[in-house]
Length: 362
Image (cartoon, rainbow, N blue to C red):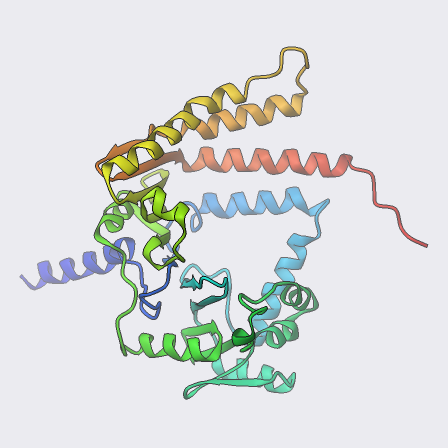
């Protein structure tokens, strides 16, 4: 019996991450939420095939696009300053946001990733990054902290507008708050304090509705999910007319396939029917839209792109309508999906090489 119970516990530990997304810390009233799981053991990202694919892609873009090199340098800078390895298979993310009638946003990001708190604090101090506090948790101004890591990251941070920053009541700066060696929270201080409280069990965090959990489980081993709760969105006549209640986008891995699920829930079967018809009509028309204009000869590149689009569309299954729900499912063989993506990048690389070099100003 001891052997059986031990085996059962081991199997449970292995299977639970595949079915459970950790939304702990995400406020229940957010309109849009998302979460990822560990990618360890997934063929799409943590396998010899995935590593070989990544190496080939890096080689393809190395000759014309410096961004791949910049990305590696930024990842190295982050790891050196914080101990956080962005490529770790064990990293997980969760978060979301809500939006007011006036258009201002409230939201936050939770990063579950092993890092070195002492190293992070030392780096921030050495670079004079201004501090913030979320309750008893110390943090630093996000833009300044990001800028201290590398010039490229600093430029990206300065060009990215903070949600609601045009609103007088939303001038509070975003911060990066170090909860513990496994958790960082990125949010405005008041919201970060609320998120940290939820992480510590002080209140109820977001949970996927039953209908969405069922759709998520159908992807096999899900690794990313986005959820929308229409009741938390600003009320509009268009939203009321549509009858849209909730939506889900999820990706998962089942055997050798990558499975995508898009599920929409409506207030009634009658509200769901028009959406199902529209979606199915668009799928039926897609192959016709790929047909070449008879008066214009196709280039080799156009033929290749059309063939790739055809392969992609072949993975999309007919729209399912069941009661007040509409579901779109797509399945692609993992290695074929790699092949499609690689061909698209190769075509892009060829186009970039053919483009004339930009004029250098005097």
